[in-house]
Image (cartoon, rainbow, N blue to C red; front, side, top):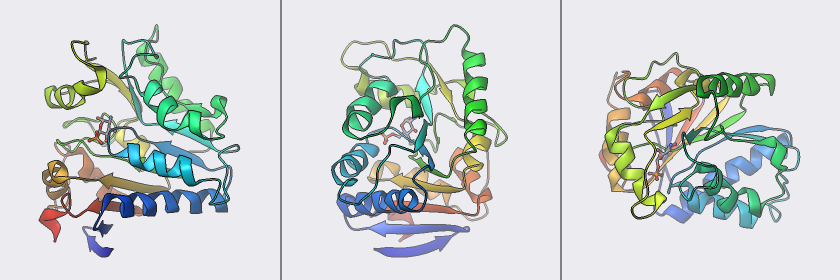
Length: 251
Ligand code: GLP
């Protein structure tokens, strides 16, 4: 592993995805070993599939349990049943919740079909605050630099809110919904300020298709709402874990 520090952010670059995933999971296990009641912010997307697989397979051996922990997912699509193939409820049940000892009442994801989406977003933010805030937040990154579903142009002061998805996000996430299925155009996402309030953040990116988002994030002195991930420069405890293809522009 190679360590760098750019723009105040710690970076770790790994030769292989399994090495990266083992490191990220190890950091999560460390948090839970120190504080079994930790509040954990969780992400979705293809990047996190091997991560959840490693965590679910290895957590007992690592001597930790999720029984007392609380989780908050970053985001969920709007206007689909929670059981939809592409929903983040389905993703989390399949990849993580069903494979660990997490207590389902402690595992939070915004409702995918609320009567009042804005009210649901406000309640979600309130629930995070009431749980004492997020101790450790895991993040992926979209090809356009989005974090959670905070698309380019989102205010750095945003809290959990309803958002319209950009055309590129809809296109890149469409395969998860299966052929011919309608892909939602709206979502509820933690805001950028919600994410920045987390005590510790790990951002994970793998593959060459993320290299330009990573390059834009680390452009010297750049902090702009048109690249949401640049907001991470406002935080004091971020570690970015990359494989070599994603880190291409930094090496
Ligand atoms: C979705 C999620 C993001 C995630 C991104 C990257 O848009 N809302 O939180 O970071 O996908 O996904 P992938 O890992 O599939 O590239």
